[in-house]
Image 1: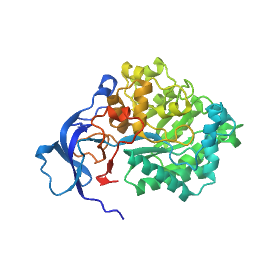
Image 2: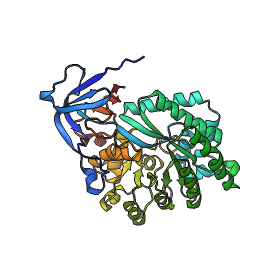
Image 3: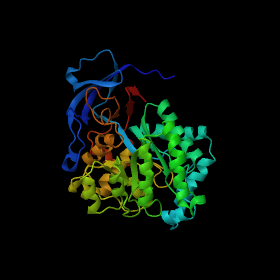
Image 4: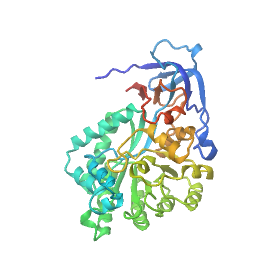
Length: 415
């Protein structure tokens, strides 16, 4: 069993980023580019929380394990608010099919895509699912991620959806990562229900949701509201039922088309609407007048070679954004938030400071952990990462192919 030091002091910090000593306020528009920092710092972690920080020359701490940051930077760990890391196997065969010219939609229509993952998952033991998901999560932690949202959705049956959610619950109990679980039974329409979609929706509402609520297996409910998947009316029906069980909405919206997913999400007070590769000023206006958080997933655009969300235009319009990985076997088989920042800068014209806030400070709000995570302040949970090879946050997306995280600390524990 790993023995963790009770207290830690990080010395010789070139720059400490993500300082926030004011009441939390979701960053929108020009504010998204503002990152508070301080040079030549120390950071003291006591009993799992940030206890002190200040000028390194006057560090008073003695009774603690010392970590030398070697003049690098220290910042909050990433908060990845949209993932699907519980899955049975890769879909690399579909990767080859796309290289040969097939589209994501064509593959899905022929039994590939989500339905392919669902078949593989039904045939996989829960212990094996846990082991593979734990390995992915461990890899993400080593790349600086400290909190994640994980969705079901590759079950598409009561038994398999519950199996996925139980794996997520086990991950939450057995790791130092803060995890939120999302029920995504409405990820696709299973093949046996193609001729009677309502029969499957009724199963979600009358069979899956009551069990999930009874056993506290999920925090949120998601629906894939998009072209070829669930309609606005079907989405509203599921979200209304989920609300009766206390599950807040998080929507897959506008990945493949302007689907109405943004509007139905806002109407149902969705915590976030995610993807948004296809939007118009109408959606931007609706989001600006709501508390629903727009979340972009540039890894999906990169891997599928589809349009990127219009982040620059949305920020200039006055919106605040979150960036997440969408780590999944079909459209984004990667969980590096460093790379997600690179994509945000290179393909969506975001500033490095904006991608920083979109993966830490703002991301905290998208899974409701803003009171404890996403920023550096006294009393916050000690989820921080040390990056010794970079001297400022611009270099994180600049060195797009590397993992600059040297040390990840979660809940005051070195991982």
